Image (cartoon, rainbow, N blue to C red; front, side, top):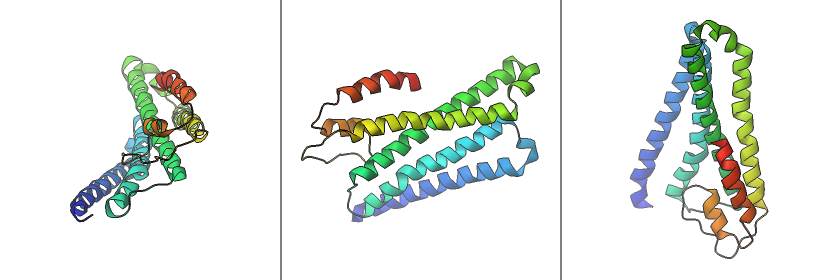
Length: 186
């Protein structure tokens, strides 16, 4: 633990800079009327998602630097659920932002009607909703598994593959879902 204090300070500083930077982006977008365009609307949601994503991982990691490095199975599933939800939401928002730029460049005369506020809200709602279904599927499939005596995961966060390796029961269904459904999400 003594040699981990400098690492703790480094990661805490990076975490605070990340949170502050994303908050400043959100505040700048919402305080300037000229930035009330679809691109900045999506960017503010992306910044908010990044704050949530970082907060899902870093605080637990910081606690692990200074104390015992254990996490309950329920905490592990919860952390994994939110990591996948927020990571996939980030990806979906980036796709939506790319679509926004595509419409702005390739169809500028219809941009205002194509990217109206209602459609932007629907795109953000889809970008936030679909990842919940994806993550819920994986979490429920993991929750049905049984685990043997060895329950140590050598990772700083919970992930599907290390949990599957610890399972005593069949992981065939989990692996099929990962391979088939994962490509759809990507």
